[in-house]
Amino acid sequence: MIAQNQGRNRFETQKWACYGFSLCWWGWHETNLNLSAEMIDRDLYHLWQKKGWMTETWFIKRPDLMLDWMGVKVKGVRKEGADYKLKKTDIVIGQWKAGQEMSHFVPIYPNGQVAYDPWWSKEGGSKAVREGSLISYRIFPRR
Image (cartoon, rainbow, N blue to C red; front, side, top):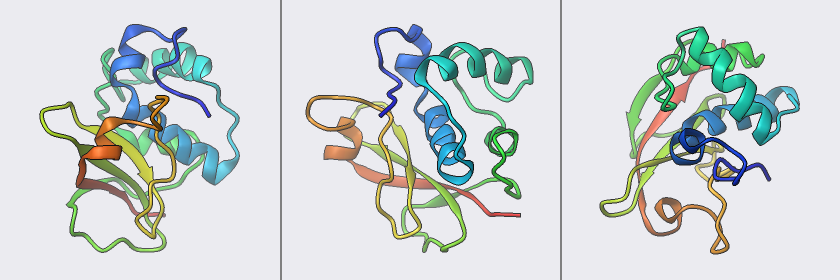
């Protein structure tokens, strides 16, 4: 499993790259794109900033274009509440939060289950997913 908080990654990636790593998981899942944590941290970090799709702190501005670049064809993105009924055809990223912790993004299967958690811990993933609750979805309808 690749993790955003691997020791070799830059501080910004370790701290804030969960949304970016979740998008990369969909790129891998849908197109068999071969990515490593180092490639995301080193190459995609700079490429996506240069294109204006994200900031240096991994604030994602154009996740739809990032997915498209990886070969995942989507028609934009929208935010939905945690009560949204997922469609089998949607690409989904969930936003989780535990207490006062920062929120955390993970890819979600259409059945509502977490597909992958980009945060590594010996306890098994992020505290937000383990102890928190889902607060919203980012929905990417397919083209």
